Length: 431
Ligand SMILES: Cc1cc2nc3c(=O)[nH]c(=O)nc-3n(C[C@H](O)[C@H](O)[C@H](O)COP(=O)(O)OP(=O)(O)OC[C@H]3O[C@@H](n4cnc5c(N)ncnc54)[C@H](O)[C@@H]3O)c2cc1C
Image (cartoon, rainbow, N blue to C red; front, side, top):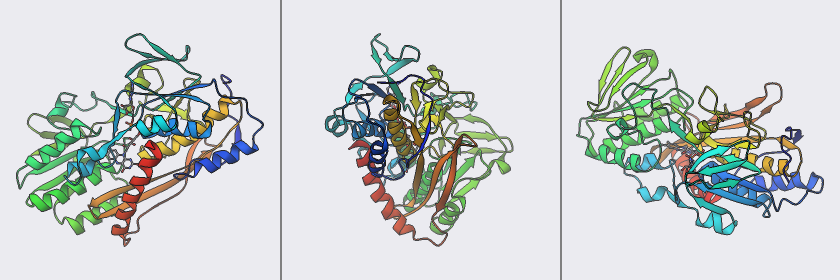
């Protein structure tokens, strides 16, 4: 059973570096370990059935089928953000984003609670619901994703997001932005407002600008896409800008905070953005607001002043609450980006660590990776990748290597790889 407050000790093993790669790694760690106590009565609760939580639940059962794993998720099916930019550009259907939990929960005998959790009682080791019921845990893996900082931009709150959609969580907002793009006049201007780092999926605003430009170049060719960025530079900037020049000449303009100064206010009803040095009127306004860890993490006191949840990256255990692990977009795991790929890798490392801690064994040094594909058009994509490990000196994750599509790389091949990745990845997460 669980040993509360076990300090994370070090032993070298490889973490979840590639899809399917971890099972062998975990097996290897288990073979070298002392005979482990039965975990049959240990209860692990996973809260949030997104890329992070669904992977963690599945991985726990793969490592030890005797564990009692409960997955709590407010929705009966999951709506994926990866792919949602293609839906907005009318290249895919909304239903392509939908994944159900049937295969995951049936094949792996995971208890599924379809309800919104309202609180975590850290000292009492329980998750609570609005009707007063509770679910106890020995270890909790929290993966609630993000929520928006509605107080961060003057004039942009939840009500304003119905006038100027963010579409940064998949669902009705995605459908709204798609409808607005289709209804925009030829010759109109789309303005995309992009926040400063860190936020969910650093490349996705620029993929969105690319795919919107693709749609407009076909159906409303006199239109423009203006990207108003709170940053002075962005990931894969050279590759995106090269793609915009080659595929959509004169259609996409990127304005950095160096030129515009800071964002002052948004008038969602009039679709006007006021910056320090200018004013931009949009026919279609897409505001991506600054973000923070999902609300439940905030309520449970798991986030710090940054709004994200600090963790020990060897186990993803919260540094603020023993027994609680935080993975995916909600955790602060820089320099890893907040992506589905990263969430999946973190979940695998975390699941292995949770099993080790429950069995009173040492936790290893993780190796994590991420790879992010972005479509420039339906047939062309670019990608970037990174490999990360734990630095004992710095007590945090560090990048050991990184790469991106070369300037003269084969973007069509990247698009084919992106489609293959999505297929394999979805299977890896949802079964
Ligand atoms: C437009 C866009 C495109 C993207 N494209 C890519 C891409 O191509 N590749 C990539 O790797 N990443 C991509 N991402 C990023 C990716 O979507 C996120 O990094 C990923 O979803 C993070 O997974 P998560 O499990 O941490 O959070 P989420 O996917 O948000 O899952 C959190 C889950 O927790 C549930 N939940 C939250 N609170 C509660 C509660 N109190 N009770 C019950 N359930 C709760 C939610 O319902 C949700 O299902 C993209 C993001 C966007 C916005």
